[in-house]
Amino acid sequence: HTLYDPEALLAANKGSSTTSYSAFVKILSRMGKPTDPVAPPDIKELPEMPSDKTFVDDDEHLVPTLESLGYPALPDPNPCQFRGGETKALDRLSMHLKRKKWVAKFEKPKTSPNALDPATTVLSPYLKFGCLSPRRFYAG
Figure 1 (cartoon, rainbow, N blue to C red):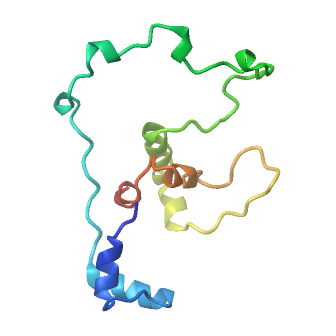
Figure 2 (spheres, rainbow, N blue to C red; figure 1 turned 90 degrees about the horizontal axis):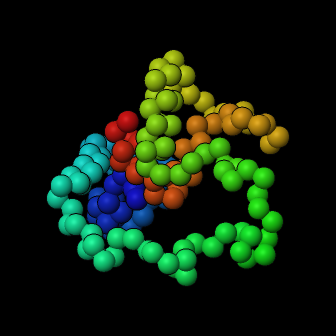
């Protein structure tokens, strides 16, 4: 969940944490480039799912609907414009990295709390929830 192994960072600083950003940057400069992200597993190498565990064929074990729990249905079943998952995170990252001038001149976005469209990359939730690894992000 980080670019560098925290234990290696501590060891590079003689067992203690840094107390300033400049000290942190100095240690990073001595450590070199972070390791590349781990390649995704080859689907052929994954064990097969046992056939008796693949499907749930009864209603008892399915995720309940809002209506079955006594709540009204949502007017739009997909109200979130930002779908989760690694594929969506990589698509979003790729979309922003194609904007070479924007990346080169990047500055903190001037956001508006009532904007309908985000002024940011919206990559933070993908990083926070593990859909996009910091190493994959760094490798671009």
